[in-house]
Image 1 (cartoon, rainbow, N blue to C red):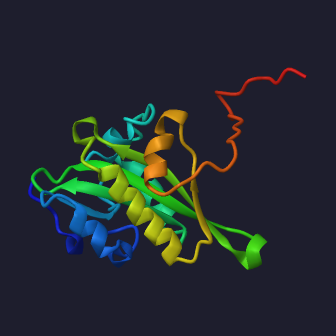
Image 2 (spheres, one colour):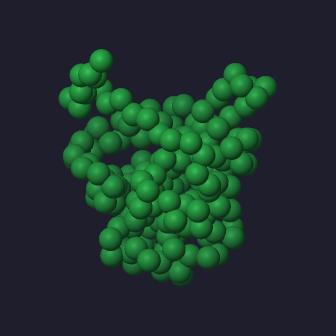
Length: 182
């Protein structure tokens, strides 16, 4: 499949939000851009599968989710790295913006789902995605950008400028719930 230029795509958000210095640091055979409405066919779910089981929701389900995200303006910013040779996604990550009442109606960026295809790991794609997402978060006025990660991934995120600040707690919903022992 030939490489599809950004101008020919229906993007989740304006590509101008991605900093040029991140684009310049990528290898010349790769391109970073916002998620596009046709990225189901470029293997978006396959890349996410390196993080967790990612059932195939089908093209219609994926496209509906894309439009739902885009219909919430200034909230979801998902990036993909695409191979110029194959026009397939090789990495992805996102930041969503939480609007708060704290800090004079402040905003917080939550980085999620940083995924790099196994064969592309070690090429600093995760770092470039984190740099771009942090830039976007700060650019839309977030007073902080946060993420959750495993202990094993902490050194990577520390190299990206993040520091440990507390602990994550989780309670899973339907299908994964456990009854607490009181």
